Length: 301
Image (cartoon, rainbow, N blue to C red; front, side):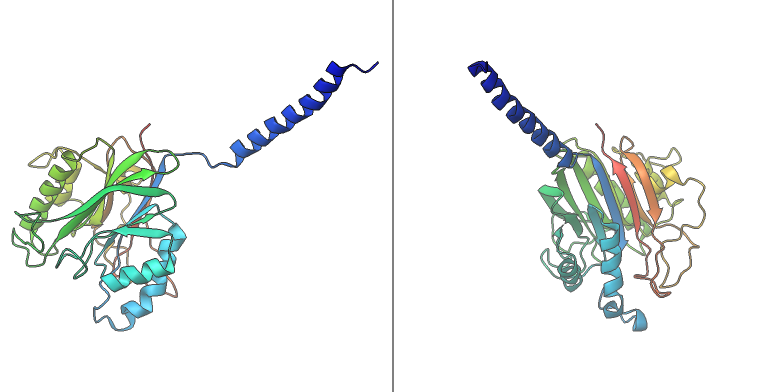
């Protein structure tokens, strides 16, 4: 004899099983909120330079293709002019940006802009300061550099993991060693004074090789005259300490000799999963007169 209770169990149990299966499938389909972070530093060469066959309009597609292919969460650009950033973002609309032009604090002059994937990150704070005795004064210069230099920074939160980090991006002076040395001291002080204790990465064209006091200072090497408040590691050297073909300034040639002057630095508690100098060519041509560098990182737990 069929009882009412039997009927209830038979009707409710399949429903519960189906609900359980649906929940499991939803969990499996939701991407894990991992704390991996990929970062690139890329001097794209200013777009008004008289570079003949290597002028911007002949390189634009290569630059966009490279950025798109490596798909980094953040990209620190150097020598970027407003129209170049606009064209990159038009080609790769997944990226947002922070930064200002160094000449007027708005749109004029080169940027040290940071591109970031808007689907993966949100910006909670950002700014730009000038590398001078008066860092809040727009277009100010000091320390022997005739060209205005800036550092742009942002605090980003990962939409998946909820973890936050700071990214500072810079292009140091190409002639004045005093300017480079004082600039990294200023940047270190700004990093030390950040509002939150989140981990930090620093990208840029430092115009300084690995033995230069500027780089030794950033890393807190024991040979350095002064010590930074927040020492950083060169992510490339963490994984490739013996590499010798590391030249990043290529003058639009395929050469890998020379010094590494482009960097992705990170705090020591950030795990380096991958790091490389991107020597990619297209049809035997370089996308820029600098090879970009990138690192895949794991933020601290």
